[in-house]
Image 1 (cartoon, rainbow, N blue to C red):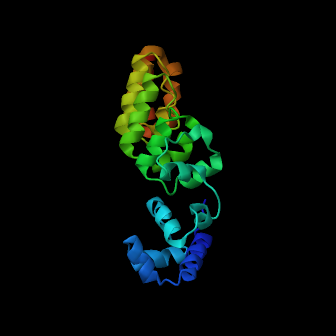
Image 2: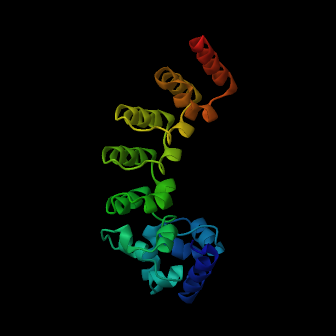
Image 3: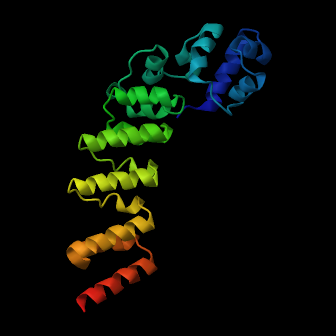
Length: 222
């Protein structure tokens, strides 16, 4: 991650070298003086859109401000078509904290939603985008395991239903399903293949539902 304290110190040094006050810098950037103050104290980072402006005002490079080269930021700022396959894990993880969701989505689109990058970026994506990725994965026969913790219950249940319709296992979905849904699947599995088939659901069922399933099994055996 970026060292906000060191970046703040550099911004402060560059500003003072230009004999500017925080108010003057804020005015040039059309932001509040408090924002500049927070940067210099290391409490926050400049928005990615402000980095080129800061570099121009100070007569330095973006690398001088952030302390090193980050190819992801450079490509996004220069409006190139970023491809995450060309970046290091370190640059990707670091840049994620400064990029907007739409910019992250552009990077992922150009890399076919590679799981390696999804695990890094997923916390920064919108709910709708994650669901769109899940739909695309299911359509293309890819695993959605990395996406499940970030999906709504309704979406997970929809994907589990699709998997069942396709004759696929829903084991990976079970930990993320609502108890009522797990119970329904357990009963359905029991009716189809007995307790052997229903047993996969037991660790994710509450005590009352397990007892109900056991009662059903006992009645069936009798």
